[in-house]
Image (cartoon, rainbow, N blue to C red; front, side):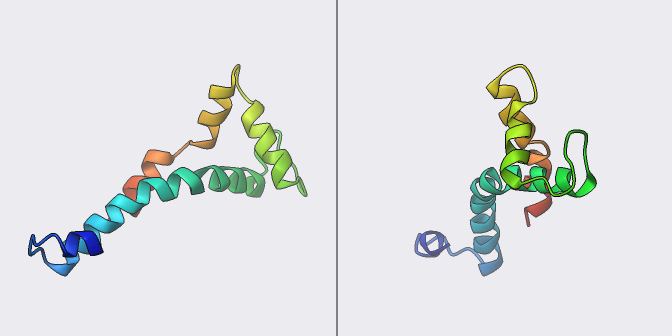
Length: 89
């Protein structure tokens, strides 16, 4: 936001804020989304997840689903694009 403000574009404050938030959301959700997926699966008791399961075990279960490591990682990013769209101002 500071870099945009100092660029001399003369944009209104709400535009600067929107651009700053838009730039910050993808990296934020890249880190946050996997924990949200695991938390939600634990809360609803999704197949394979059980009450009092540790977070580490839940992450391991999510990563082990599918035929490859890529499939497991993609499981952790279910809903990523929806989260980006939801959070964009």
